[in-house]
Length: 414
Image 1 (tube, helix red, strand yellow):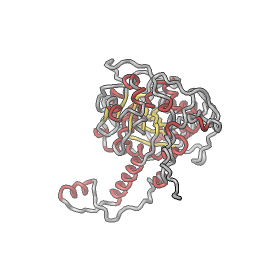
Image 2: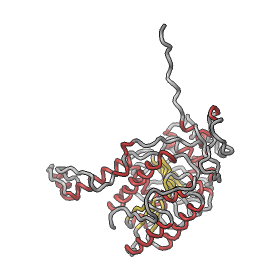
Image 3: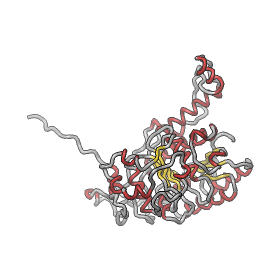
């Protein structure tokens, strides 16, 4: 008697397995609402399903489960100084690289050039292997550089991987679209009008692309025009949830620009759904104080994991000295920050005009590429528990980064 033939099992749609916890919930790691009724007896309901005023559907609002990154990523060891360098590598940068390219020679790279090339390859590999996630740029201080940071970080990611979108999560019209290299024809209001269709399984990637603006560096931008050419929209928690449901249908790495009001529903939604928080801090006392109290308040409200994993981006300003930088780092470390990166001052970013990644200085591009690689490492470290899950704060986070406070200032001197 022949053996019965079994068909292939239907693949599990991980996006439909769990729903986000309702806004305002503070129940730690209590089991979220199950979509699959067959598992209803194993989990405890956490309240009614999320509101869906834009008709994107509960499946689209459901959190996606992200598997743990492959061990091959090995992000923590990417930037080890002991990494071996090829002893006979041909120079591809500096004057030797230019001579090789122009005359077809094979001048060898110096040890410094080889180390730089190795670091560049490591950064590129980290960005390319970055898991999906939601990176939120936040600071309650106006003029702290949130929008330039969002655009430059998205550009650094977009230069090496696809699926990167920077979008404006500000409750009032922000400047993200106004400062992007290319102007967008549509905005958040247009996406929300068509959110139900765009978040459905029938929507093609090309349909979503019509609402976004592809930038020269490879990323895309979604914002709101300041000139009144687009329909006005007040962005709140429901709007953020609907936009996210649409974007993640075809994109997997979101960089969210935020406003200055830490009590606004949009700001609370963004921080509550952040897989990685990036806090730009120009080397000024007022900006440092604003960042300090934001991190302190997040810890007090139960977001200890988010605050401890936040990456502080120290931004050079004219006239700042090393003593002030050290003092700021110490104070922010006392507020829970353990990860610090740096970027130099760039007149193009400070001028307030449109930002094209390729038009910034080489030092600025290198610094933001390094930032993107480190954020990719941050995401990889948290991927097994929080990427795109919208997990509510669990509280009681215990840092494994050693004795507290700990100051880690990464990158080269300005």
